[in-house]
Image (cartoon, rainbow, N blue to C red; front, side, top):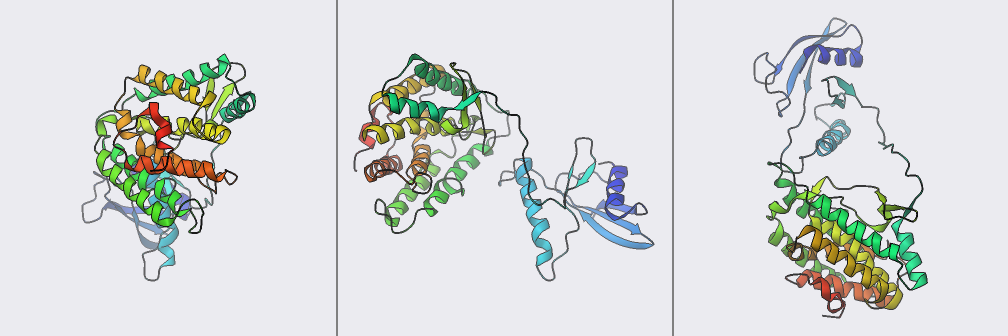
Length: 361
């Protein structure tokens, strides 16, 4: 912490005549040691002859959902927005961030945030391939090459492991799989009570199964690896006529469980087969087999079959959703929910026998 940079920030906020009279930890001495590890800094300033006391607060990373900078930013942004709406609460003055060189920058005027990215030139989404395969009814060599390329890629990135001290990220990822608004419980809450293909009682039973899975696998922390997090056909852009691709929208953090990515892509082969044939067969079954066989050969990770069911449960809820996919045949939805119910109950996934999971249990 550079007190000169703190003073520059104060002057930007209160005017060029503002100055710091004293600074130190709350309850401590006039030393800055320890700030940045969760100890607030008390600052006494003077503006046009009037003294004012301020507190500069940061957050430390911990295993309670604050591992990433963006987690801590979320908490601080929320505090800034709600402190001043509650009577008798201490008032928030500003919200900002530290730059790499230790400077302090205000972001109090932010309304919405945005992300600027490079354009992917000449890439086409993988779902267009799957649509064309549905129309043709046969696979071409390039279709098989692309399935192998995707599978090999996942095998390669899943071999990347984090350094020590990251173990809580695995437990968090499994917790979020079940409880996050974008994942199982959030999807459950999006299902209306009067649907003809699933009842709330059935959804509750599935959710109980998901919670059971959380307790079974949340301590498999040695499996933590690099992941994409949303590896589905709408986030994969292939270059024309090649097995080369570019990815979009990496989500939910850099580290997680390999089963998340594998389930995200392979559920679509099951989904497309059901839509085309009403059963798991044909060219999409072949792509699914190619993907799994390649992945297991490249990764040597047979343990994935012990942890993937709740991830398939999550992805099943996505493709069975009348919000995300409003035009599915009733029989397709029923088979998808047979699959989801199976994932809530089985002990281990047998990738060679998907058809048995699609039958009513």
